[in-house]
Image (cartoon, rainbow, N blue to C red; front, side):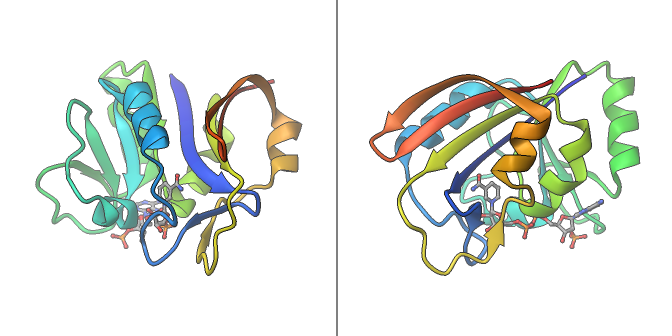
Length: 160
Ligand SMILES: NC(=O)c1ccc[n+]([C@@H]2O[C@H](COP(=O)([O-])OP(=O)(O)OC[C@H]3O[C@@H](n4cnc5c(N)ncnc54)[C@H](OP(=O)(O)O)[C@@H]3O)[C@@H](O)[C@H]2O)c1
């Protein structure tokens, strides 16, 4: 199974603030939608709570949580239970869409990374991607990059 991690970060690895994104970049949201449409998406409970509209349409929404009180998504209480289900369903590809706890959980399993690097400064962030660009460069190689805006660059990486 291909496991794709997708996130947007600033140059200091900030990804979140007050359980929300620290920025609003329509071009990045559009890119996110294009990439993830019709694919299963996996997220943590905090990221699920942060979504303004949920479930995200035309995608299997999967939430990792110790609680079982979400009706409009498939919930799992552990990585092992989720992986068993994905294997049983012969799932070929998933997108892990955050947040920090869930990126950390999947890091060793990730086959590809989709990173939007935002060069604007983000003040008072409280959530950070748990691995550095050096960690990324150690395990993955850059396949392509393209500018989404003057200050947002999309990068696609594959594991070495
Ligand atoms: N910039 C980006 O691209 C991006 C993308 C996504 C999210 N974000 C931001 O990241 C922040 C949220 O990240 P976060 O790290 O606080 O939270 P998170 O990773 O979204 O969710 C954490 C929650 O997931 C559940 N969980 C974690 N590990 C689990 C496991 N092994 N088994 C079962 N459940 C597990 C727990 O939920 P329970 O407490 O319910 O058990 C935990 O409290 C927000 O600010 C959000 O906007 C940014």
